[in-house]
Length: 284
Image (tube, rainbow, N blue to C red):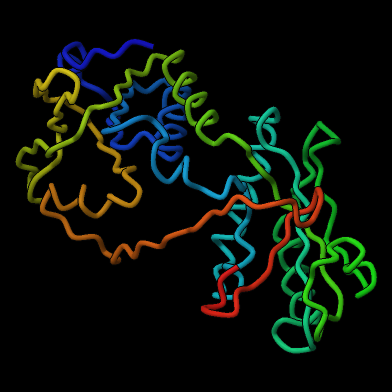
C-alpha cells in the first residue's frame, strides 16, 4: 500500500472519498470492484474514530423499530448477512439476553412482538452456505431459566427474558483495513494523514457550481495538493456537516451527534450479551 499524494494530484479520479472509516473504506472497495478509479483520503489513522470506538456489533438496529424505521432496520439486517458472508473470519453470531419486567412496555408481550417483527424483517438471514453463521429466531425464557443464565439480574418484577441473535465483530479496525487493502488491490489510491481543507469547484450550466475535487493538506510533509474527481463522496462521519460546510452547503437534516460509553467489566452473562435498559434516559 503506497501513500503518494503528489502522484494522486496528477490523476483525475472517478470517485474521491473523504473519510477513512468503515463507510469510506467499504465504499472505496465496492467502487473499485466495479472498475472505478478511486481515491480515499483520511485526516488521521484509518478507522481511528467511530469505527474503532464502536460497540463491535453488526446488528439490524432492534431499537429503531420503536421509531417505526422499518426500512432502516431491513437494510441493516440485509447488510448484516452480507458481512457474515464477506468476512466470516471476523463477523460471528452473538446471542443477546433481554430481561423482561412486568407486562407493560418492558414486558414479554411487547418485546415479543418487536422481536417477531425483527425476525420477519430478517427473513433472509440464513441464506448462507456456512451453517455456523446461521441465526436462530428469538425464544422466550422463563424467570427461572433467565436467572440460571444470568444470576445477577434484578429479581423484583422479573417475568423472564428473551434471547435473540445479532452479530459481533471483535476488530472493526481490521475489517476497515481489509476493505482498504481490497480497494488498493483493485487499483484505488489511498492516503492517511491527508486532511481535506476545501473543495475545488467550477460553474455548472444552470445549476450553480459543481465540485470538481478537493484541496488536501499532507500532514506528514506539510505540502498542499489538489486532487480532482468527477464525484466526491462525503464519508466523514461525525464531521460530515463540517465537511459539507467547506462547500458552502447546509445539510438537509441537522446532524445530531450521540455519544456511546463502553466499559470493560467482569463476565456478567457467559457467552451471551446482556441487554438492559438504564433507569435514566431509557438507553440500553
